[in-house]
Each structure stands twice: as C-alpha cells, then as structure tokens.
Amino acid sequence: MEQRIRVIVAKPGLDGHDRGAKVVARALRDAGMEVIYTGLRQTPEAIFRTCVQEDADVVCLSSLSGAHDYLFPKVASLFRENRVDDVLILGGGIIPEEDVQALKQAGIAEIFGPGTRTQDIVDYIKTHIKRVRAS
Image (cartoon, rainbow, N blue to C red; front, side):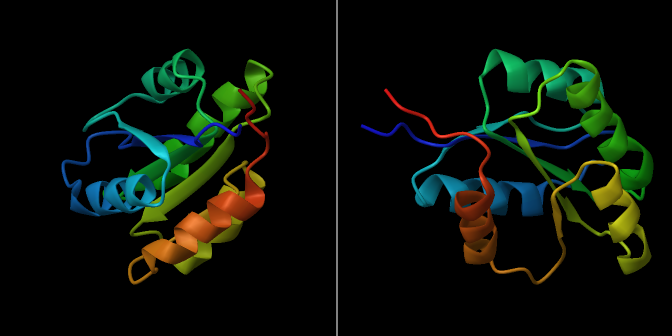
C-alpha cells in the first residue's frame, strides 16, 4: 500500500503574508497529501531540519517579500550540502520572471506564481516526486 506524499509548506524570511501558502497547503491536503505548514518567519536551516525530521517528499517555499533570490537558493544548498537529494523543492509567491531561471539553476524545481491553479501544483508534485513511498 502506498503512503501519502508528505509536504512541508514553509515561509522563509521575514515575509508576514501567508494566505497563498495556506491556500496551497489546503489544496495539497485536499488532494490526499499529508501537509505540514511551518508558519511564518522560518530560517532556511529550520526549514531544512523540519523536512528531514518529518521525512518530507516535497518542500514548498513561499515568498512575497523579495528575498526569494537569497532564501530559496539557501534552502536548496542546505539539501545539497547534507546530501539530501530525494526531496522535491518548489517555490511560489511574487517571483519576477527574470529571477525564475536563476532559482531553477540553484535547485528549485519549479516556480508557481500568482494565478497558478492549485491543481497544476498537485499535478506537478505527483508527476515529479523523487521517491516512491511504500508501507
């Protein structure tokens, strides 16, 4: 029997706006995934530790503050430095189009901006998950 996909939804940095992250978290939960929302103002290190402790399959980072160009790559680098390569890292929020390629090169698999249908995020996760959970 296959176990549910485990997802961490995290708000790195000082961004205090989390409505979008909560909408995504609820959509993922409604799609049958197990979702852990870390809350506001998380450090990259805390996000990484939570992912490892919770044995997450996916981490969804959300930023509206403009610090995505530092914070998202920092999270991805922690995974690389610690040789954790089976977690799908996604980003979302207000991300300028000109920043997307650099974020992908830094290890963020995909960026989902305003107006993205939540079903598109669900489908992306199910298609691109890096490990298969078995009980």
